[in-house]
Image (cartoon, rainbow, N blue to C red; front, side):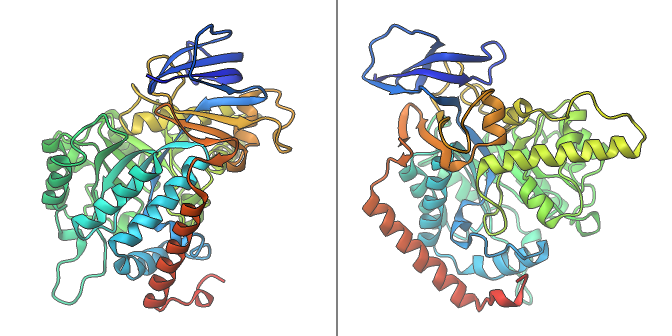
Length: 459
């Protein structure tokens, strides 16, 4: 097995037993971390110089609609209903399997370049198995660790047709993937199911979908981002909880409108919650639930969600989640007449944990990723501490969360394989240029077919 030695970095392990270690080495054997300590004396096939670099675990983006990459920033002026009407009701219906492939590929490469080594690819424009296969082709080609969330499209129903809210998740497609190319839970790309959940489906569909994922032994995820008056199943997550089907293998995304009692139910059942602060602040009047989760003893995970509306830099997502919760906590304290806090809520180390260990837990992968712990997978990120926006680095965690951006990511390893080196993706320049052209042709066709005029909305 290949042996890789990372030398003399400022290592932030996100492992409470190891802590932060200056002038630290990391020995990687094959796809796993073997040692983390200063002055490792070992032969290596490759040595990576980490002087003046901050070394962190690979970031975990726990919620990303990667297929939408080509629609980047098109919805910066949209409301939430605009997004559902324009994307799911129109543009999304015009995607073909190869459109999914090229959007997913460039989106995955972008995440890798920005220090994200694992994504939950929540793919919800699937109308045939070909869409899933082409999306998985892209994830394989990018070399990113990914949980592929098989979703279902949400088009507007034609007269006389059942709306998507009344249609159970297509089990035959999920079984075909589970019995075929994603049969293993140990591969770089693994399978999950992106179900509608109780806010977007009738009770019979809620029960069907939760039972299906239990029968197939798969993790699942659902959106929870509708105002209570719009919930299709007002009982919400009480339905799967009552049936004994809500547990740690389910991930709830957003949860802004969920009341305290139901949020506690979700946490008590062991399910995780992913916060996508950029999107939630953009299009929702209710606050991200980070602080409410902390009060329940739960750790949030973080996601980017939809690139048409959100900034896709995961460092930006960390900062916004941290700063919004700080502002919210201090505002509540001030309104309640409490004295100024002795220390700020949500310290940088805590939000880095959300972006690493929190994401690993949400994806049921904490035993494999999320910290630089010997025995875990070698998903490692080196950040350039000499960059003008980073230098000088006094406290590496502070600098990572407060200052870093995707352009500062120097080196990325996934499963012990270098995917970015010296600030440049390990992906052929000519091929990347070709894929860019393909993406531009793809999305230009989709927008033209949709009849969309950006000047009419949000400009």
